[in-house]
Length: 306
Picture (cartoon, rainbow, N blue to C red):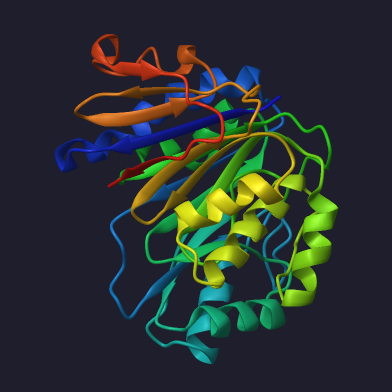
């Protein structure tokens, strides 16, 4: 049992409230997932010549770090010297966001070689990812996520049932650029999906079943499908019980399996689209009493654009 939340702010004047509105959504879903939590927020994109990357260092970044403190200043210095003199790094506890003109491939290769203890959470022009172990209330407070601003977000609270409780196993999972996925449910064929994708050059970082779904969609979009076409293929390829919530730079998307036994509810007003596993995490939203409320149908694509 896990909890999912999604929020898309339609009106630019309200986007500064994204984190504030998200906070009770995540906390109330903590009953469904007290082990770990994560959030992907989509902000105004960086310039066309730039990419940004979300990093997680735990408490063992090495390279001269003080005990319990990642050596972000050292990583930034190394990056500037080795790859991009204009790069910048903004730390937030065990997380940091790097902005650089380096390509995604160049940055990933450099990070693996120079800082193998630092985990790459996401990359793109708009996405920032935060995830960690602990109750969602603690994770949100740890990184000040209630202050986030942006266009839309995807969040998850996890109760581990099939893999370890670690930041790497927490959701959201990401693939490619500006794409993330969270999942409530369980897949019955993640290893057959892995066996299909690994010979095609798709790399896996965990044994979490959700990552198999994320990498499958990455592969389909790499092959030319848009998100909607990739999800339609997923109905045939991904076996199990699931509610998937996905974010891209300009979309929020929701699907459920053919049995739709994993809960989801949507509230939509002129100001926002809000999604959760249970209505109680939406009850605080302004104007929710006048929202259009509905339960998504099985094997049906729901997509909202920014």
